[in-house]
Amino acid sequence: MQIPFVDVPTGPGALDPFKDALGKTDVVLDAIFGFSFKPPVRPPFDGILSLLAELRDASSKINKTPIVSVDIPSGWDVETGPEGNDTVPSIWPNVLVSLTAPKLGAAKFEGRHFLGGRFVPRYVLGPPGRSIAENCTRRVLEEKYNLNLPEYPGSSGIVELPRAPRM
Image (cartoon, rainbow, N blue to C red):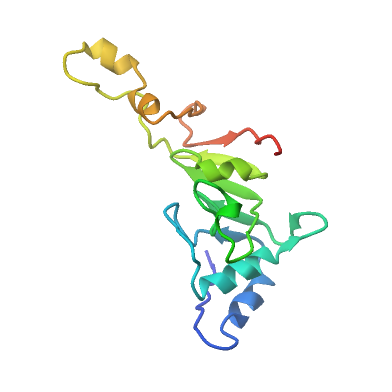
């Protein structure tokens, strides 16, 4: 696929190769942290996130280079969103691909939002003592975790979510 990888060493000028690569790329895939991220952001990731935040044109609020984030934008708090981390500027991706279910912090996301994977089975066997029909017609996991998951079209493993209303 000829995807270049850039090593980011530490020290003065360490982010120069990454900054140069940003100027030559068509899209950035942000998968730096997972949903269990907790601040503070440590080097070299604080510098990387700052460079990604600089891609956003303040006047138009559009990234000069599109960013696609996986699960939750890196640096965002999974529950509160971009305000959850004040140690580095927030990145604002163009596209977010949530896995399993959208995270609470994604409510502040403004771009195209997809939900990937059918990781939560619709029907599972419930507690003993109920008939198979009762157990298999209940959305046990969705009820247990108060999820409101969309229907996936056909056999697709991804669905686009409606845009959140602006706050």
